[in-house]
Amino acid sequence: MSWIIFDYGEVISSRTEALPKLASTLGVGLADFEPHYWGFRDRYDRGGTDLEYWGAIGEALGVPVDESTSDTLTRIDVEGWSTLEPSSLELVSALAVAGAGLALLSNAPSSFARHAEKQDWAKLFKVRVFSGDVGVAKPDRAIFELLLDRIGAEPGECLFFDDRQSNVDGARAVGLRAHRWRGAGPAQAEV
Image 1 (cartoon, rainbow, N blue to C red):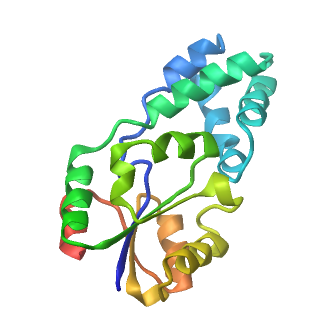
Image 2: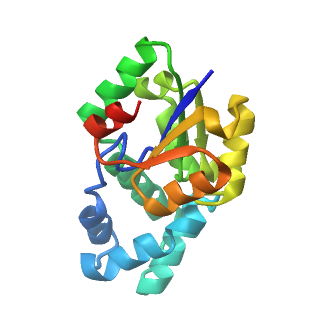
């Protein structure tokens, strides 16, 4: 069986628009907040807890973050990443109906993974791997090998889409056929 593997953020979903709300929740400006949001994200996506992530951002900004504030920020962040791209969902739904083996490989914290698993769209994917659950993230070789093991496929049997070139390069290094996500239309032509 061949597999089609999708990233989530900015492929299945739109880019988050929650950053201004997150910044205002901490009482800081967006320009001060955003570099830390992305700067600490890799550790969060590799299994860091919600409180560790938001606490690190708060510390960098000189704003204390307790558990309650962390929970609020996590909720806003999860909501921010929950807006789906209609054309992407349409493509994935059509592939699922056609019987394609679909997998999701996302650099995302465990808190987002727990939310995602409850969504109807998640059922379209036979296998879902979230980096926060496994402690490794794209573009590391280990996460692609873990996915291949879970789906029981050889790299050449897999087609992978991601919006980041570094992740595409990481997938190719393991032997997957991989393409930079440029929208559902171009992806459909590759499928």
